[in-house]
Length: 257
Length: 310
Image (cartoon, rainbow over all chains, first blue to last red; front, side, top):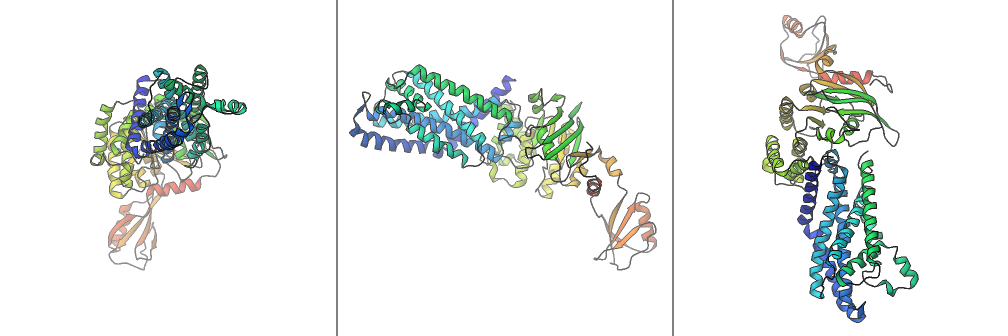
């Protein structure tokens, strides 16, 4: 592999993706900011005051890491699925396919774009959260690494969705019917300790639970699950989904005849 | 060295359609090559395989000696592709379209900007560099795709019907540009439905029909196969009577012009000598049909169906 060529190509894709996010900031940055502000006002401020404490923190503090992670996950996913499917739909994905850059560069470039958007939105939501509650980061390294790994998982998942998608409807099915329910049931708004034992066990099958809890551990220092187990799960997902992306792209699924 | 060497290339699509039935093709470095064929003949499939957009079923493809199977990245680096369908990112600016494409080939931004200025200037798009490509006319979009394909300065430029839907003036200027590009050393493979375009530009021609190559020769040799040509003569005074022209097959048209078939055995001088002798004054003359078009139709119609020639 020509490393220099692929490095320049990677920089090109990432720059293109970031400029796209910034160019359409009204669609990419503003909506999650408004949605999360509403979450903080309604769930955190109005309803949260009646709920009281959870795991030793007031409810607003408790849900803030989950809401930040939720916005990171959905935006990482949404960025890659819309960008790569858009390129497929308009045909300019062919520019990349006919070029000598490796398929890994194509995947990493788009995933990096998704991660950067996820983190940008995460920073905006964190700033909004600070208007409503105090947040001090207990474990900075865990916080940063978990946000990067989690957004990578969902950026890769978005890439796979884009490969399989044949029409625009197909890129909203997974976020609507899979991603949103898993996020809501992934411990964003509650500790799984509140659930009956059976549902606690069921919840352990939800990968988002590990991401939200590990991220919450990074910020608040509390978690429902083991952090090392969370890392193992997330890294496993990164490796598995990246391998799936490479397999599909090498076969040309949905792209080459 | 061959710019492109295709050996026993086949392609069968998932629905069982056999688009290519074992074609062989060799394009010399520096050549200007026409690949012609009716719709669905297999031209775009062949180009798609060479440019890695279509998976082949079997066969070998070498681009400047680099195999698509064992040395794909090097083969891809040699190719610039202008596809049939407009496949631009319509939200990107003209300049970014070209510069980003250069980046995919490992060209650093500073050099890419210089190349973009060069090719967008040559293709008369530099003044529109900050406009989104969706704001360009159809002809401009096609020129932008050519600039994008050239920015990494490929040794082999493949154009799949580059002048489709482009007005005559722009088509002619694109022809000039392509001839200059070829003269500068770039090998060009062109598919087109404008046979006049192939005849004007290309030195070699392959005709593909039903997934097989039915002709592959120098353009001049192919045209020599024509047994004769039909000319339409406009007379000073339209006639309803057919002049008797020994040795020539003639016919009077409804508009009072006459059609004359000039066979290989005769030449046009003898036709005019005879018309002159009879006092018939001709105000203008034109070829009834494009010569290549005539030959193309003859070759395609005469080919037995479902046979493998390639």
